[in-house]
Amino acid sequence: MKEITTTDILALSIPERIQLVEDIWDTIANEPEAIELTEEEKKIIDERLEAYHRNSDLGSPWEDVYRRIVTKQ
Image (tube, rainbow, N blue to C red; front, side):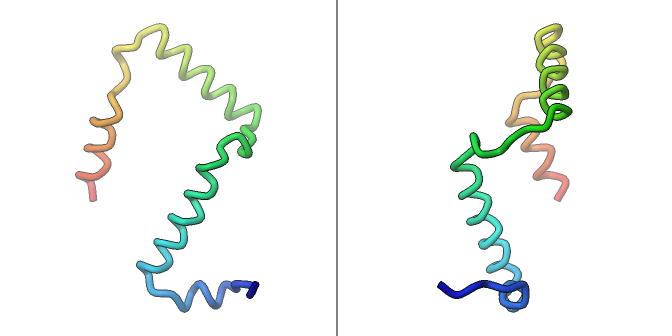
């Protein structure tokens, strides 16, 4: 198998590089258990979950968040 270098990657077009990043991300997302959270990240998640349980009306549904993100582009 040929080793891929940064030079090889930079020779790709932007759409090809985006596709490469998406492909790599998909392989990571398929193994979420392999990603170790730091203690600080766990603490943040616990704090946010606790805040949600105290007042679940404060959050936004994913669809609203996504819509806000894509309309800013």
